[in-house]
Image 1 (cartoon, rainbow, N blue to C red):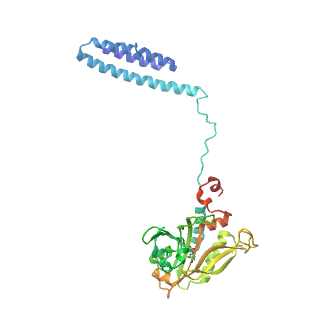
Image 2 (image 1 turned 90 degrees about the vertical axis):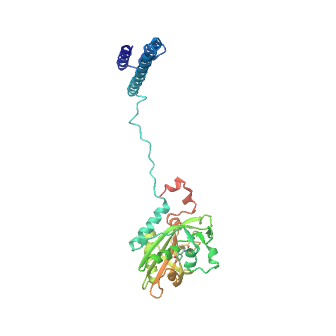
Image 3 (image 1 turned 120 degrees about the vertical axis):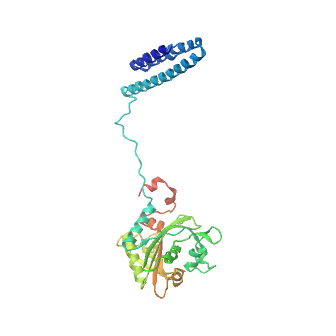
Length: 337
Ligand code: DAH
């Protein structure tokens, strides 16, 4: 019986290599493994053998059956592949255009931020960061906001719990930075800031860039020079600056800085409410109390600071009239830049 099994295996696998299509292969399979196939019938014959021998031959027959199944399957793959490449309808068409691969791009806010960083790096500023979850101490106290002072309300603070909040501005990074770095200091500190506010020109999360320069004899003139260089690089040489007296607890004197209206170039339009100017950032000379908080002696050093909104700069630069566009992730908006 063993010889018979060997012969069936040899003949069938040779026959499998000779069949030329799937139909012939299927016929062959039925002839060997079908209900009345050669191997099946032989297996039925096992019953007549003594039990010891039946076990051994049965085992061998099963092995052969499995090997044949594999042989038929391999041959089927070969035949299928051959029929695909013969049939042009099934063959992959190498002349078809490929599926387009969409390229991602930098979000316009990041692009503006990197542009701002690049301009200040030219002037020797380094870039530093601070935490978004901040203590009341750094956000207000260290920035010279008196306790219970109404200017804290102005910030629409999102409190977390005891003494913790989402920073309302990047200014607290000034003190964190001064605690670690001694003058001369020249740094910008970009990052996310949070306020409970939401309309066309306010978002609960927005971005600011803080600037700080501390050294011996830093003056308002230096502030003006640095900001003028920045605005010219960012908006072009014909952008003019104007300093208006203002108030911030952390600077003295303080100024709000306006730039020639990007829309009407100073003629006066609805965007600038007829003034020809647009507010672009806040700045001033660092208040002595803030230097103290940063463990820097105001008798020895002076400094200036400024803060700007990245969304606002981007809106002015590209003529975007609603802040929500930045965060809605509408590809039609994002792809424009
Ligand atoms: N922290 C201010 C705000 O969020 C912006 C600012 C104004 C920052 C004047 C400064 C500054 O460093 O000197 O409105």
